[in-house]
Image (cartoon, rainbow, N blue to C red; front, side, top):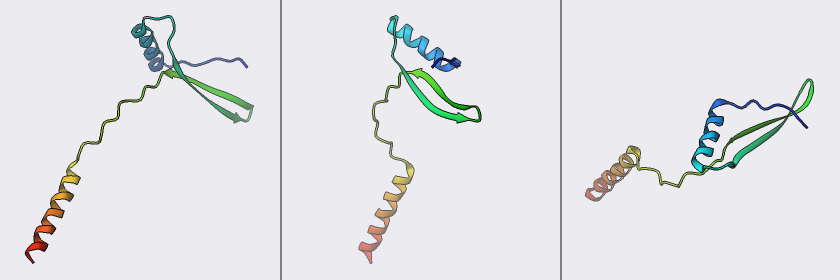
Length: 83
């Protein structure tokens, strides 16, 4: 199967930056493909992008809602112990 690939500016720039960062003739990219069909028949959509690197896990920050819930629980406990 042969065809063309429309390469968008943002992924292309990120891949070029990966080449510069690696100072190499080769970089690893991600690839995805979808089988599609229209009134002309079946076709494949293919997309390349910079290699996905998962970010390091960071626990969620406590938000105000959590603090308010905790304060409310403390108020209820204080009220209950007085009555």
